[in-house]
Image (tube, rainbow, N blue to C red; front, side, top):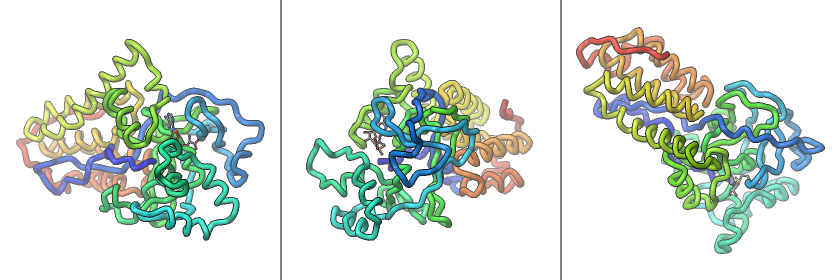
Length: 349
Ligand SMILES: C[S@@+](CC[C@H](N)C(=O)[O-])C[C@H]1O[C@@H](n2cnc3c(N)ncnc32)[C@H](O)[C@@H]1O
């Protein structure tokens, strides 16, 4: 699962004025999945080791098991930090997994073999490897490594987190602590399922599901995908437009006013769609447009917003948040600073 290749935030390209996109963490979004699930009689009973009060693992409609909030969680709350049971290279074999499992306790081995197996019906992949492929997350100390090449880990709790096309949880690997950290991207209600995104969630329902089927072998049962008729058509339109704007804003280097309008439109559509994930990207785009034309007052306001959004999804110590904070203190340090005639653009609303 979870090799989320579509980077919600583009690669740090500030050093190359030709492509002025900066980019950020590797996380996700918010809203819609407000479907409620009644708590089990004994929270955490399904995995004896999980005595954490903020969530429980439970059956959720149409998705097998999932992770559900036991209490209201504010935006940006860390509700889970988990170390991997073991990690492996992406090209690992079934024997590699079995060898890694030898070092685990009996309970851990049992829990491992209870995890979802997306290859069960295909039959060609041996079970230990199939479970690894279904449930592992990329967790690599080297942030420059391409996702497909990254070392992957098994996290027994996080493996129960389902996908949503409007996720309310972001995740980040913290190499210093060797820990995967999960934060809420918006306020979450008691009984709400906590979901990340396995794939890029821009694009229409059809696009998203084609991607999920191809890469993860299932059709999405999230609330965005359950929409019908006019509601679905509008959601599809908004997401397709955000995807277009994502590309178009970066092509507006010579037309900062147009670029700013597009970035602001994208942010409005993201809000309407409940997608927090891409907010810091577009805010940083707006920042870069401002520094281009030496509008440093608005630049500071935009980069501050990018920093706030990044802290919510990936925490204040992430590379993106640290970069944004640095530009917030000194927007003139940006390489594009003052490369176009001076002009006043606009700030965040
Ligand atoms: C990593 S597991 C997530 C936890 C899993 N539901 C379980 O019972 O352990 C991934 C599997 O969960 C299911 N799943 C995750 N998100 C889903 C979604 N949005 N819609 C339908 N099934 C989903 C799929 O069967 C997928 O192969």
